[in-house]
Amino acid sequence: MSMLFSANAQWVLLSTLILGMASGMIGCLAYWKRQSLMSDALSHAALPGVVIGFALIGSKNLPVMIAGAAVSALLGALLIQWIRTSSRIKEDTAMGMILSVFFGLGIMLLTIVNRTAGGNQSGLDSFIFGQAASMVRKDVTIMLFLAAVVILVVCIAFKEWKLFLFDPEFARGLGLNNRLMNSVYLAVLVLVIVIGIQAVGVILMAALLIIPSVSARYWTHSFKWMVILSAIFGGGAGMTGTLISTMGVGWPTGPFIVVASSALFVISIVFGSEKGLLIKALQLRAQKRQHVYAVMERSSAERGGGMG
Amino acid sequence: MSYTGWILLTASLVGLSCGLVGVFLILRRMAMMADAISHTVLLGIVTAFLITRELSGGHMLIGAIIAGSLTAVLVQWFHARGVQQEAAIGVVFTTLFAIGVILIATQVGNAHLDVKHALMGEITFVPWNVIELPGIGEIPEATFILLLVLSVVLIVILAFYKEWKITSFDPGLAASIGIPVVFMHYLFMSLVSVTTVAAFDAVGAIMVVAMLITPAASAYLWTDRLSVMLVLSSSFGVVSAVVGYYIAVWLDTSISGSMAFATGIVFLISFLCSPKHGLLARYVKPVTMSDS
Figure: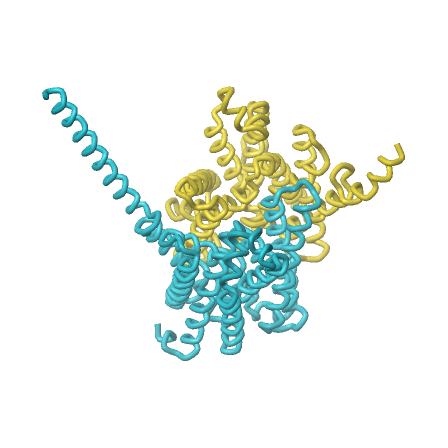
């Protein structure tokens, strides 16, 4: 617990907070593009790039590894697109293939790099499940900067995103370039995935994009509030998970962040004010009572009418 | 049998059973469901281990079936409550997987089961863990379980071949002629879970997705007949397993990773060269058609 109060730990906490916020916001875009699982495929596909980035430099250098991860995730996205459009393979099959084959390639390379000298000390393994504690000040600064860029991209073009997601035809009519928007969307999606993999790991990064946005859905119908809530949920989960994972030695950060956000999801699905189970049950009961009341009233009126 | 022989046999069995199940996975458009189940099976195995405190095949199979069905049920439940199917899958499997990893990291320690093993499999250890079978002699436990699972998969597929065909291609028709579609769905989910857990020891949680989906997708590019697709897919599975093993030996790297990579190569070849749906055929075809 004492490391909680060290300056480094506070920086790490801040970075997972911002990371959670950024991924919560991008997650809303992915949710409405119905591409939740795309983020899963892309985060797995980033692994070979991370390892190649490491192998090129020979030591852990975050910018190079992030660049490698981005290149290989983008390659994965393009391959999925290509397979889907130029053969009869469906999108989900294409995603599953890219996800597992790229991950397999990543594990192959990882084993080779780990075998050669220095690989073991590099903490490359921590990229699989995330190890926020392994981040140094420089990594945190890079993460903060990139996450801030992502958040800015969403906030500045908020109106355009809304049009692009909900009425692409109308957006085109207004002269919005959908192709450009698609490319920007893919770019921010990949960006948020690659900055998250050091803290959350390639396997569970997708959860940080999917779960907060689904939870936010249970509280509001407005897209704006959904994005805000999702950012709050994501940031809260990121911080809570990181805090818990510092309590044990060698505990991976990613799984704890995911479980924290799942706890928020369970709370949302039960107590959510829009479509939560509790509110629905109450509404159902009120309706039933009203119905019974109405039936009773009608029958008593009929009886009254018959007597008169 | 030699050490290499056992490994190749085990790997081929993985390729064979995954190839068979995979065909139905992609025909039913449930590829990502397989991804989800392959992750949640981890939770089933860990829970079974925590309860019984031993890593025995039987308990793990039961744990896996429960975890797999739980995934299918939960996804269905959330979907019925207005969560998009994709998002529901994403929420359920990441959560269950994360719980599994946390349990391993905090409860199990590095005793018998560690996170790396669960992810990558340890096919190199398979031949050491043998059991004695009456009449046959010593056989690695993982190989024996895979044989069992393969026969179950074969029996279930062959016994209800017609039903699988109809439910996969036209669920509406299947329901209207009285085939229990929902039951078949959960039966199939159990088959996927059992296959996954049997393959788990050998190739691990994520590479099993490659073995399930990729050979079947490759076969899908070569044929329009279900029976041919089943044969092709399982042969592709075996070929990738064997080729993957030799790549791994050549480069001295992770065997399961190379097997997943080899399935990718098989798919790439099919994608380029398949006579009907391949890329090359697409460029050649217009010429021959204008000739005739």
